[in-house]
Amino acid sequence: MSDLTPTTHVDANREESRTTAQAVAVVPALALDHREAKARALAVLWTGDPLIAARDAFNALAERNRQLTSGSPAEIRSALADQVALLEATVSAYTIAAARERKLENRRALAGVALRASTTLTQVLLALHRVSEDQRNGEAINV
Image (cartoon, rainbow, N blue to C red):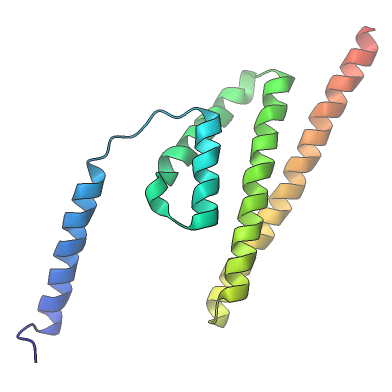
């Protein structure tokens, strides 16, 4: 039998986690362009491996979206197309995770994420269609 009490065991685990987190935290954040950020975000969704620097990837994508407030229709279409790829991956990943989950509560939570991502995917596809239509209409007027 171990000399560790439950509290000592928890403290030892907490210290080990803190040491591991400090070692991981030393890695500097990378400057990502939107294509690399999308690739990393997709990798995290498909592999579930958060060590691919998902936070940096999602932050880079969010920054790109903020910059689109003054973007051209082509830049906006490109960003929406990136969003479609991410949302499709999210829907698939969370649907599969929900189907594999044994606990009903977790299954419902995962399916809820998949459903919300699917709804957002539909909205993004409609926005992409609207931007394309607006550009076609503008070109028809200018002819």
